[in-house]
Image (cartoon, rainbow, N blue to C red; front, top):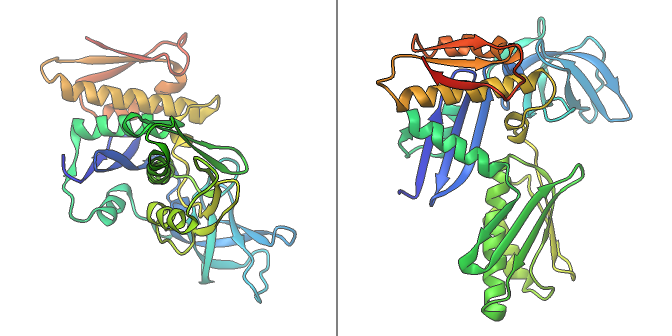
Length: 340
């Protein structure tokens, strides 16, 4: 396996990009076909101010698609409801929060998309310009495996005695680096350094941002060594703010939110987006089945009404070897694929 591999899974309904470094998943990029391009990271639009909230120090803009987006009020500049602005997305929507914008200047005309943000293939090319792009069944499997790790909160390295937990609450990301005590202080130090590297990797894989608190093994450390290791692990992004290592062995840093957390695409819920998530999983499974079993003439996907409403058009794009059968008794997530 090469040091760097990239995969592009362009299954209808949802595109996934995966970057693997030294055999470990580094990035998982997800874009859905139905998501408004206007709120994609890097998209530029003309927006119309629909609300000004002095308490939040922000304005809310209609971009012509999706929910109103959030624009921090520029210093020394007065905005008015109805004003047209040229803006770019610097943070994608997450949870109940809309996209965050940066002001570029005055806008002209009705709210509309001026320039789309980069798609998954373009992002992969920027992240790994010299790596060959793998597609097809290998990319589907890489995306599935990366998604499984992105949803996990625990990482083990038995050869170092490392037990790492990475979790997110509403307020912050917590990282707990634990060690089984083997090899004494040297073993502890190795576990801390590797724990920082793996924590940074997992946070990137999950597309998380915000305040990060890292609980290191032990309470007596070389602050300079730990600080350098943290910067090497999390990167030199000027928007990352590194705090000092405190006397309790906890280091804090703040990372910018940019992409939507991958969990919001991977975890179905009880809304319409939950049926969409389940439908996409079925379509991806159907595509993998078609690619794996080229001699079987036809497959049928059986699913509930809500899933079928999303899945049918995407399954049609896979060709005549697969069709959809609607069973109203099935709930989202209960669909299946059979021959015939």
